[in-house]
Length: 123
Ligand code: FES
Image 1 (cartoon, rainbow, N blue to C red):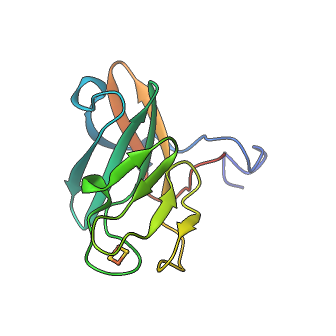
Image 2: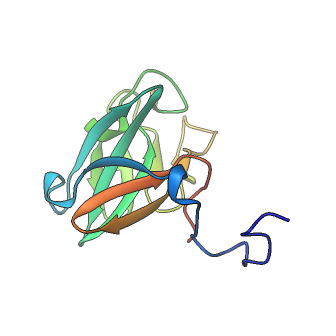
């Protein structure tokens, strides 16, 4: 049996080796976002009132970079065609986007931001 088999599915707990170190907490100014690339991953890291959220950087509608979008509360508007997503849940917030943005489970520890690429954010 897997050692995590009895853990609740809604807990953000992962095997240590799953976590990917993205950047320092201080790299992401409050109210802003940055793009971080790691292998095949390209993600947008947001700091909303001191809480970190990570979603895929590539807009699900086209070539827009969500880390370069306009942040309004918990929403990011893609600067390509004006579609929007909820940063916390990845849900579509405005057309023409129809597919939600991929979210990632985030860990902030010792001033470092890490994600588990196999888990989505629990909100
Ligand atoms: S590429 Fe993002 S809304 Fe079209």
